[in-house]
Structures are given as C-alpha cells and as structure tokens.
Image (tube, rainbow, N blue to C red; front, side, top):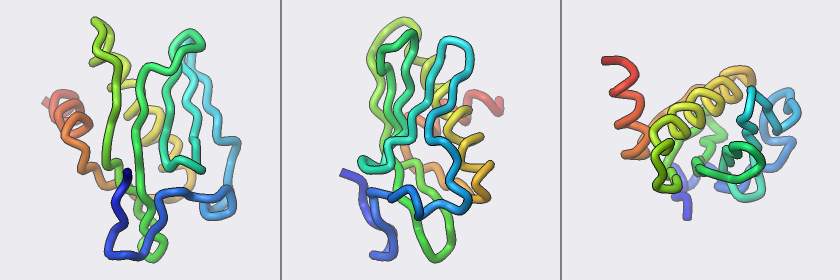
Length: 116
C-alpha cells in the first residue's frame, strides 16, 4: 500500500486532482499505459496484458508525485518493460506539470542504468 508523504497526500488520486487532467490512457506502439487513479498506480500493458505496475503518491501541496513501488513480472523482457513504464509514466506526469521523486528501488536501478 502506498505511503502518505507527511500526511498531505492521498494514494488514490481522483481525476480532478491533477491539473488539466488528460485521458489517463497512453498508447505507444505495443504498450499501453493506464493511469489507474483509484489505485494510485500506472499500469503498463504489453499486447493487452498488464506486465508492470508503478504505484505512486501525490503530495498535493508541492504537486510532486512519488514513484514509490514497482511490481513487474519476472520475464526476459522485464528490464525493457520497466524502462518503458518509467518513460511513459514520467512523460505523463510531466505533461501535467508535476515533478517526480523516485524512491522505488527497482525504478532507481533502471534510471541509474539509463544515465550511465
């Protein structure tokens, strides 16, 4: 379960909580990213099957979103799925004018690998 940030956020983020809420579904090739705001998670589907989930919390005072916990199926494509999940989720958040804090160990490992 996502943790609150200093008690100022909610893990379940209603559609009206984000500024200028766009469609919460993004399609990119064979990937689909669904912003499941009721669960506070981005869900990545590959060929119509959910392969990874990135749980988040939103600090409503600073408008910062925290990528807190990642669930991913252990497959040969897991690292690629994780990179795509982070790329699409970060793009979706940036379009809404929010900043991102990454505390998820899996996400940190992937982002460290991308910057190396």
